[in-house]
Length: 172
Ligand SMILES: CC(C)(COP(=O)(O)OP(=O)(O)OC[C@H]1O[C@@H](n2cnc3c(N)ncnc32)[C@H](O)[C@@H]1OP(=O)(O)O)[C@@H](O)C(=O)NCCC(=O)NCCS
Image (cartoon, rainbow, N blue to C red; front, side, top):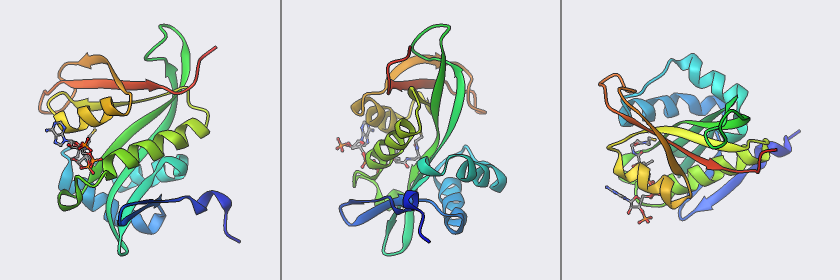
């Protein structure tokens, strides 16, 4: 029987966005290694897929995976309301292969993941991004994210991170 939740698929030009499956992880891990200095163990990817499958999304063209986004749902202090506890969707990693960029895949992956996080009851979504990553910062801003703080020395090479967030639901 097909699970209803697995049916999610969205067309973006000649690409399709769909939920990641365990068989896709090898390719997702290779895209992560090629595109970002922040890499993780295979177990970490598997764990995110198990714990937050709705917001682990891949972009595909002709059966080839060319991009992904993966998130984790956390409980902690709100990035918007001081001292309030919040259910937060953490965008852990996002990447699109270089020769497929500029086709709105980045924006569409973020929008789809944020929608999924909202459906899972998250009050807000957030991420860390290198302060010098103008393209990613611009995309998140276009989608309504705001820089809520700057964390100095966040990355291993000592670069600053922008903490960016968006409110999804009014908190009580
Ligand atoms: C960030 C990334 C995912 C974007 O993917 P993408 O598929 O090219 O994104 P989109 O096509 O949806 O959007 C690209 C937008 O960035 C804009 N852009 C490109 N370079 C830019 C720059 N230097 N400064 C500001 N905006 C820039 C484009 O004009 C486009 O906006 P538009 O649609 O309004 O014209 C991709 O560049 C990537 O994988 N980078 C390496 C990994 C990374 O940095 N991940 C993010 C970490 S948080």
